Structure formats: C-alpha cells, structure tokens
Image (cartoon, rainbow, N blue to C red; front, side, top):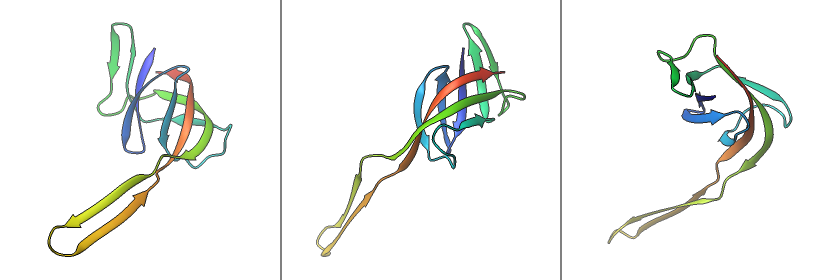
Length: 103
C-alpha cells in the first residue's frame, strides 16, 4: 500500500517503512506525527484519488531526526558592472519514518 502526501509545499509518494526527508516539522525526535493531507492512496491496481484531498485518509509517521542539508552556494555576477554577490543557504529538514497508512 502506498500514499501520496503533501507536506511543506511538496508531494511525496510513501509506503509503510519508508524514510524520507521533509521540511522541518515542529515536533521532538521520537514523536508520532499524523499527516492529514493525503492526495491519493493505492494498493496494486486500485487507486483512490482525492479532489484535492482524500477524505478520512491519513498517514502516521515517527520522527527519526532533525538536521540541515548540505550548503547550496549562490553566486550572482553582472558582467562589466563590478558587481558580485556570494551567498550560501542550508535548508533545515526532518527525517520521518512512515508507520501506518489508513484510508
């Protein structure tokens, strides 16, 4: 069984036991999180789609860790104008493990 969930403005296809990195969630490590924004649930050939969300479906996940991704370097240059700008960014994430899918 799999589900398509939406969290942090992105969509993820998940199955029970999967570990994924999502945008940072405000919960402690080891806590259970319920994701109610389920877009689709499928098992084999049977697929249930929501419009846009599937009513009564939810995904339960356990928070494994928090962290920060690798640094992304940003460099802007205007040629012949003596303009250069250096910048860096590290995005925070939460790693979750999917425990149950209901719907």
